[in-house]
Length: 108
Image (cartoon, rainbow, N blue to C red):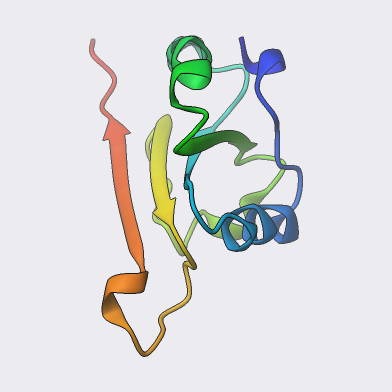
């Protein structure tokens, strides 16, 4: 289902997606489009996308094509879903920034 959700293909596009949303959370799935765990997550995200469209937007980032955030966000897991609300940059108002990372550990 990764072809059904919007992809961000550059670090600048990721930054702009986060910075441009003022009222909705930004959900970004970092991983590899070919990875079975990512495909499963993409399917789940696709099924909830319409239900949450009023308060969240979903994007996909292939970390092979856009490695800009691999070190910054410690993207070492096969699938990482991060939630951003407002600007990812620190500001004078601590409550204006929210970031949360969920990573799925592969099961044997």
